[in-house]
Structures are given as structure tokens and as C-alpha cells.
Length: 250
Image 1: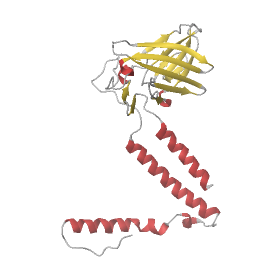
Image 2: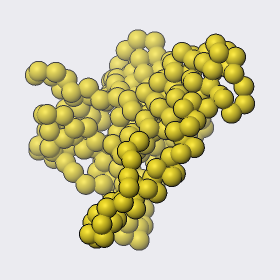
Image 3: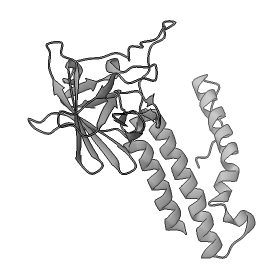
């Protein structure tokens, strides 16, 4: 029971920490920021791209921000649509974004998933003003590829927030992702949950305790407010040179 609780908590925490920012990627090579390529009106920046090989489908993609394309793609990063427009399928969600730096001499890419479907968007760096998305279609079952050519695909090529195609009151687009402070708070909360539940399970099933005895180190926690007050008074008096007070460390 104790180890199951720990394992579950670690999995939940990992899902928060591992998630990449779908708009921005930073390594020792520099920063790739594709947020300025995003439409923010719930439409795709690169709609209805048809693979050169022909497959009966067309593909739409919006970097950084989710979009909707009828009949079935809602809140997606990319959508596969039948040429007659009767069917559409999500092939990736923004929140699933995973970046790859491309290694030595390779091109960076960003990968999206939705269920069994996986989309890899290869980023091609150019500085001549080209802005092009090439849909390469379904390489193998449920595996899709695209190629995005733009200066924002270059390391340190672009910056700033997404440019809205709708009327704006002057607000700036924000960036996604989870901050270091949020990760720390999540980690702290998870550790506290594991601490209390883990010890409670141990005391209940291994030591057969009940009630208040299930609280780990309860003497410390009951006395913690008093310790905190005494510590604050001690520091306050020392700072104001009002003399020391009897103080015993925990």
C-alpha cells in the first residue's frame, strides 16, 4: 500500500514536470520560439495542406496554440481531414508537445501525440522570409510527418508572443508551460501527501494503530505553531536589539 502510494504520486508529478512548452524550446544551442507563428482565433495557421503523394486526406497545423476544425478536431495542434470534408481526426494535442534538439548537425523537431497517433514536425531553418508547411502524410500507420520552414525554426530566430489575427485590446499572448516555482510547489505538495499517507498506511497495517496515532510525528506537528511563534519572537527581538529571549531549537 505504501509503495503503491509513492509510485502513483511519482507518476502524477512526472506528468507535470516532463510536459514541454509547446511554444518555446531552450537548450545550450539557444532558443526556438514559434509562438509568433500561432493563430489565436481558434483556426490553423497552416490549413488544408495536401501531401504531394496524395492520400485522400489534407492536413492542418497551428504552432503553439490549439485550434478547431470541423467536424471532429477540437482543441488540437494538428488535424487530418478527408478531402471531401466529411471526416476529421486529431493527430496531436498541444499539451503533448515534446521537443528534440536534433543532436549534432541535425534539425530540431517537435512531436505531438493524441492516443495512438503521433505527429513529428521537422523544423527547417531559413532566413530568407520563407514561411511554408509541407504535409508529408502518414509515413506508417498512425505516424504522421510535416516539415515547417521558417526563420522561427532557427535557434534564436524569433521571439515574442503569438500574433492574433482577430481584433485585440492590446493584450499580449502568453506562453505555455509550467514554471520552476510551480514545479517546486507541486513537488512539495506531493511529498507531503506521500509522507502523511505513507506513514498512515504503515502505522495502520503494519503496527495496527488507529485514530490520531496514524499521524506521523504528531508531537512535532502539534507543537509546530508554538515553535514558529517562539522563533519569530526570537528573531524579532534580536533584530530590534531588544535583548534575547529564552529559545530552544527544535
